[in-house]
Length: 350
Image 1: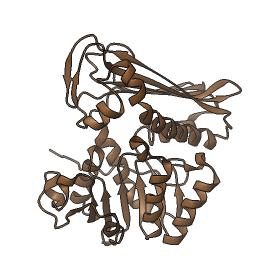
Image 2: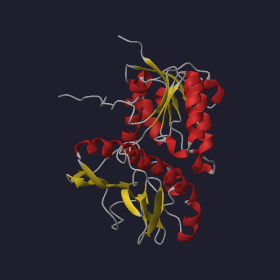
Image 3: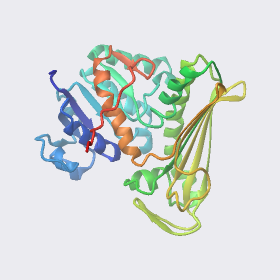
Image 4: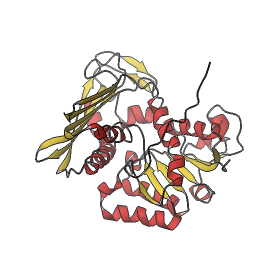
């Protein structure tokens, strides 16, 4: 039996916590380090942090010390730096430092298709990969699966593609992070305040979905003229509580984002994202779930009525990618270069 792959969990927030639990409980992995940002977590054992027995691995906030820890792979899952007024280069420097130190990186901060940012970013990543003999792979659910990996997979059934449409509608009623739901997405804010507060979120959304759309279109041999973004919001008509806080009448309770990859002014690929603070209280726009429609020959429509634990799904996709990323040739990995990962969930049999 091969030795377990050594894994560092970088950030233990909403998604990182799910990933950490999987790394600890799966025998093919060995947890060797945990980087945390919350002062209250420093020095805690990683196991009890996610409801498991002690592991002997303590949470640390010292970046240099974690960078020096031996590992085969890092699950890099902090919030993107742009959420805090930074830019793409801050995350780029961290990822490159990890790669150069000899650790493969799977990240949920973007990097799904870093070619979007031009040759300087690509060269920086490739140089770090060569220095460490490592690979980098950006993943998630949407982007990272629904808006890129799934359309590319289904395109194999097409003889002609006219338009690809992907829709996500998500219910944030149970999302535990006030920072994400209220501060970044902007739910619960008055309209004037929302316009200012949502700027960092808009920056991240535009970057992530531009990567996703251009990954798909490049794989299909389509050169886009631009990726256009529009967004709008809806206001609550009553007061209600969600896990992250209270939504009051007249404040933002939902938002809708559309990203369109245009060719000669017409959309070739469209991604629509609907975010609802409480799906049973917000009646505008589609109910939670995913839809994928491919116009062409043949016409294809796939719907997923609900993903009950989307954060767990995003974490699972990253964790399930550890082995193929560690086995890949050094460099930037995408769904075009990395073999499709298969499920590794624990089977519960009668």
